[in-house]
Image (cartoon, rainbow, N blue to C red; front, side, top):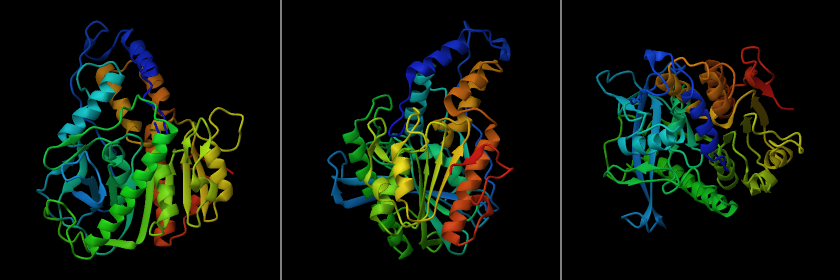
Length: 424
C-alpha cells in the first residue's frame, strides 16, 4: 500500500468467497455456519539476548500549526522499544495496540475479508515487551521507524521488538491525520482511507509532512538525552531511558511509504547515518514514474533496498519495474545493497506476514485454500524463514552501519536464507 498499494477489496473478496464456498474442517464448521470470534495473535519471539521494555511519548510540535488538534499544533505519538534491565518481572506485557486504534484497524481488515465485526483482536494481543520497566545500562544505537501508508506504527512491531532485543533503541512513530493514532486523553484521530487511491500530489505532501515529523522526533530525542521530559503530559519515563540513547549512532528504516520517508529524511537531515527501505517506491507515483528528489540525487551514507517480487529495477518492460529504484541505484554514492525476498508480496514486510495466516486458520480451520489465500496476500514460501530473513538482514545492516561491525551476511547470498537474492 504504499505509494501506494491499496487494500484491494475485490481481490480479498474473491479470496474470502473462495474460502467460504467450500466445506470447512475445523470444529465441523460449514460455509453456511461459520464461527467468527475475535482472535489474538502470536508474535514471533525476538531473537536477541536482551529483555524488552516499551513506553510511549506524546509529542507536541509548537513550531507547526495543525487546526485539527485541540492545541492548534502538530501532535504525534511515538513508541519506544528498548533493551530492559531485566527487572520489573511483575510489570505487564504491552498490548499490541491501544483499544481504539485496535478497533479501527481490526474493523478495516475484517471488512476487507468480508468478515462481520472485528475478528482481529489487536487490543488483547500481547507483545514481548514489559511496560515502563527500567532500561538496560549503557548507550545503545537508535533506530527510527516510519510505517506504510496509511498504516499504524504498530503493524511492524515484530521488527521493532527484534532490533530492541539485539541492543537497539527503536522509536516508531505515527503520522497524525494520515495514520490512525490514539492520544493519552482518549482522543482518536482516524487515518486516510486505505481503499482510496492517493494522488501524486497527496503523496508528495505526505512525505514532506512525514519528513518534518521525523526531524521533530529527532529533536525531541535530543531533549530527552539532555535530561528533559518531552512528553506533553510529563508522564514518568522509564528509569535509565534518557541515558540509554546514543544519538551519535542513529539510523532509520521504513516500510512502504516509510521507506521513501527514510530516504527523504536522510536527504534533509545528516543526523540519520544509515537507512533501509522495505519495499517502498521512492517516487510520488510509481505508475507515472514521478521519481523523487532523493532518487535523482542519491545519498552519501549507507542505504539498503529490500524488496518483494512487486519491486525491481532491472527490467523497464516488466510491470513491477520501479524507475525510482533504478535512478537511486545509479545516483547512490554511499554503501548500497539491493535485496529481494523471492516469492513475496508487498504485505510480507509488515506483521501481516504472520497475522493473515493465523487469522485464516482461526476462521476457516485447516481449509486447503488457506495457503493459496495467504500466498496471494503476503507471498509464498516458509513464513518463519521470511520473518527471520528480514530480521537478520536488517540487524546486519545496522550492525555494520551504526556499530562498525562488518557483516558477512551482506557480502554475498547465504545458504541460510535461500529466499533472499542479491540484485546486481
